[in-house]
Image (cartoon, rainbow, N blue to C red; front, side):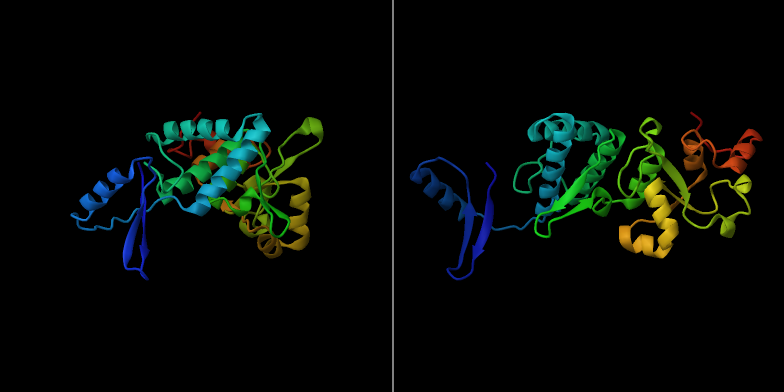
Length: 260
């Protein structure tokens, strides 16, 4: 059984909380045995209580979207994460056996959010104290990875809207920095001179209306720089963009791209 210790400085005691149904005699024997051992503190960089609570919020919401219970969704995502990270079974509690490290828990949160994007699930966080709702972009651990995922799946990085022409919903590629400051025309755009972000028409217009700085302060988002591989991966997603890159690609200009 797992146990944990607490220090009672007033009574000069170290108390070990030990979940058990053993008899009093057994517990006394255990206490006498422990009195013969030195105390050694072994720090563990385990998942935090805050991370654990956030994960369960996402399990519940994700499950509701797909028709799973929270427990079913938790086990499914854990299994997928184990396979993705090539790790064994783990616990989401810092007080149980084989807990995730803090870094692994951060990666698990990122993994869940990216899986949700792939499945067109728009996750959000409710602030019950303030009665507000935060989009998942406000709490995602790695905002650049999130932005790349949105670009590749053609999802609005601000609100999570999905590109769906049949429903008159369009996700647009925004040249986050003014095109005129990096290239002369879109015909000369190789995708490597400025930053990009994917936005729905509403938020695309808003960014241009309120300006880049106000947009960043409002949504805590900004565009990202692309490398050659990322531009290549986005060619089919945004067929009217990156014209110079397409031309140079045909001419064999880019040597280190993994072609699909």
